[in-house]
Length: 72
Image (tube, rainbow, N blue to C red; front, side, top):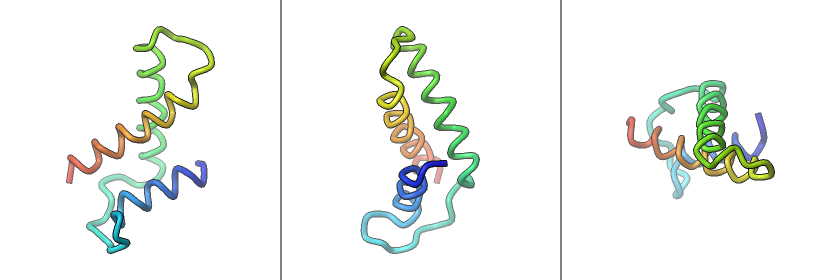
């Protein structure tokens, strides 16, 4: 798992002010798996275009974070 992904997960858990919130809904491994699945869904939805893998991944991270927040 990338350092960037762990940092973003930490931001979701702590929030922007650095105050600890409730425990994350999923652990880091589950988060990574959800992002991977969502990134592939975006890849397919966007016509399986080569060269957009990073954009798909970053967009998937944001979508999964939003889903995690909504699940709280």
